[in-house]
Image (cartoon, rainbow, N blue to C red; front, top):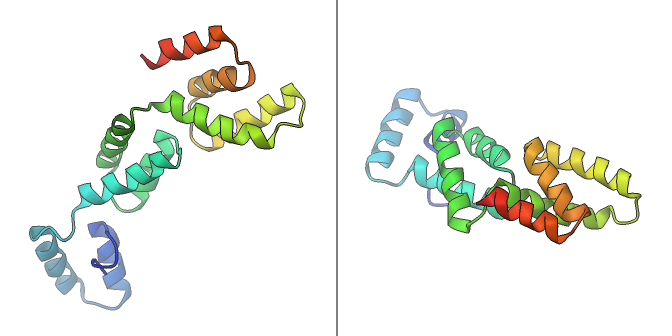
Length: 155
């Protein structure tokens, strides 16, 4: 299972127990795999976080996905922050990217309807209200003044 893809210790433990292995044997096997570095929760979490951030997920949603995979929440939040730093992005830039992509499908609607639907979509994706407002200003009301506000917010 470990050779096929990277797994968290909790995910591996669950999979082995589901296959009917005894808990004592599972614990010993996992301990040896961790000791020999075949299973590394932090590396697993970092890879999953990079993937989520590359897909444009909000940092909140990316951390939730990593934690849901069986990684400690503090580790999940830390690796998501590292993934954002690696890409040179922040929450606002992710939100703008998601808003730009979604706005294409809303192009035929009235501006107020676009704003409402886009706000709801971004909120469901886990972006904060502040990030959403900045993204909406950038995407729906493009002006040089909004670009300056975004630059100030990301500094």
